[in-house]
Amino acid sequence: MKISASIYSDAARPLQAVIADLVAHQVDLLHIDCNDDLSVFNDIKLIRSICHLPLDLHIITSDPEKFYPYLIENPVEYLTFQAEPLQAPIEIPQEITAKKGLSVITPTPISAFDAYQDFDFILIMATIPGQSGGVFDRLNFDKIRNFRKQYPNKSIHVDGGVNPEVSFILRQMGVSTAVSGSYLFKEASVGNALMNLTQRSIGSTYKVADFMTPLHETPRFNIENIELQNVLQTVEDGQMGVAMAVDNDNLFKGLVSSADIRKALLQQLAHGRDLNELDVTKMINKKPIYIKEDATVLELLQLIKNSPFAVLYLPVIDSNMQLRGIVQFSNLIKAEI
Image (cartoon, rainbow, N blue to C red; front, top):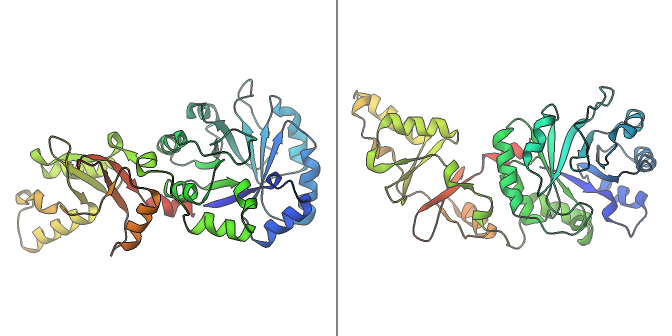
């Protein structure tokens, strides 16, 4: 996941010093907030004279057209317009070649993006825009997951409340870029902050239930009425490479992964047996590792670290061993591409 540094979050130093610090620590992008102010292009010109880092410009305005000539003259790599003040869907001139995004605040549904399906990404504002140091709103975890499901080929950017713990969750959810401002500059150094955001989690505020894939989206089958075709179809339809086994009371009984299926089929063929005679219950891993829904992010990380094998997904259960959802880790790879 890329880190886009919000350059105006450090008001104590001159802009030149802030940029030099970020360049020295090899931040990925420079995030520039613009609240309907054309003078922002003076700063853009200054930054261009100092460094060659990609610029991530976020504009809040009800009159986007007045920015177009300036954007053509002063190109940026990423251009985002805030959805809420717009009076109608906008059409950005072809001469503006930046990757284009639409920004939405927490109360705005992701359906706002439907009118901008030619855009490259959505920017989800997880705190109040312009409020430095705000706390990430948990509602945005659902928003991220739902957008990923509806627009699997679009990138997701997040701005607001990104600390090391949130950063880990966002990477797990496949977010490609996180904007960080106050956290970057309140640490002992920008370098320390960047390392925390990209490598480890500090503290633990959020629970697994806050960001897991919920039960209704989790591929699962009933172990009481198990058939090979049903299991295979459940794994295929779920597109996660795994399906959970539950009983009539939704108690978690194990899981079947694509690897479990391949192993069982190969063994059946190796012994010259008819595939229709395969005992499907033998495919079920009845003792997989799992995580409780009220576990913290720190506990999740410790469980993964202590696992003797690579963890691609974790069933999530409640205190009664009922299945509640799943946590996937394939998105961690996607977020780094």
